[in-house]
Image 1 (cartoon, one colour):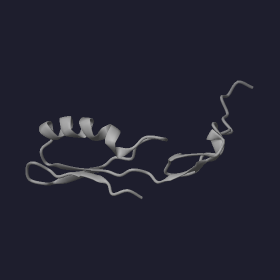
Image 2 (tube, helix red, strand yellow):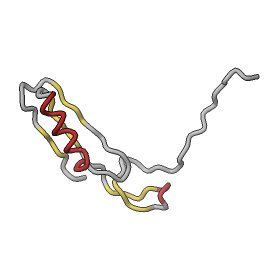
Image 3 (cartoon, helix red, strand yellow):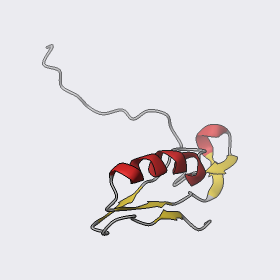
Length: 84
């Protein structure tokens, strides 16, 4: 796994945000947002890891940055809406 992008707090470090990007993305895509928030939230250290590249089943096994394999696009949950 690539090294994470780390933006140190520019003030007294009292908090850390670890931001996990979405499927197929990388940390680099979120650096501008973290940098802009950093100027307002000077106490926060930002850690932006990049997921490893691996085959993703739902995308026909195509290799992409993913935290885990995704096999289905929906989940069936038993929900009682009280419409009986």
